[in-house]
Image 1 (cartoon, rainbow, N blue to C red):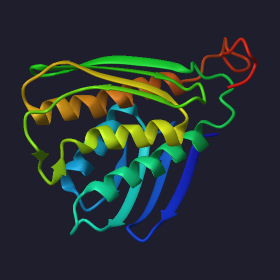
Image 2 (cartoon, one colour):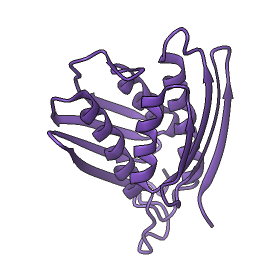
Image 3 (spheres, rainbow, N blue to C red):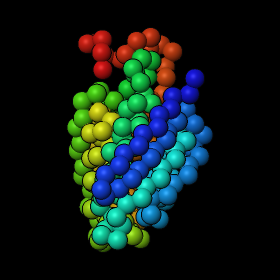
Image 4 (cartoon, rainbow, N blue to C red):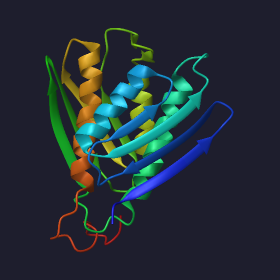
Length: 195
């Protein structure tokens, strides 16, 4: 059976629904009200081979902060639920992704213990309607809601669009590896016997 989850979250600032299938084909349907963010999420889904649907109604007239951060929370929770008991998964995933002049490293441990390390810088304040500083807030929210150890490092790059897109795609590829099932793993991949 496909590993899926649907999560809803409503606050005074945002109303968000996210559905994910970890065993998908990379199809997405995205409406966050922030077109560049939709483009990034599409790259995550397509290259991670996840089927992803996200609907967000947020206070984008204020700015993009609440919509992007809260989408990270909802997506992280959906990932956590879809992974389930973690039996048979590889647990660790990593990917080094080039996009033109940019090179980004992403590494993940689905340990159940959230931790986030971020090493990235942008030269501009925005990519489209998305504040570049919101990349950090999004991935932080995902990592803590999903209970994952997430490391993102931009090794080099000049174009903010390329850097941001490489981050989302690398995250998708690394997560795909981490959630992949391995028939040699009959329980959870831990000396503790529990994740």
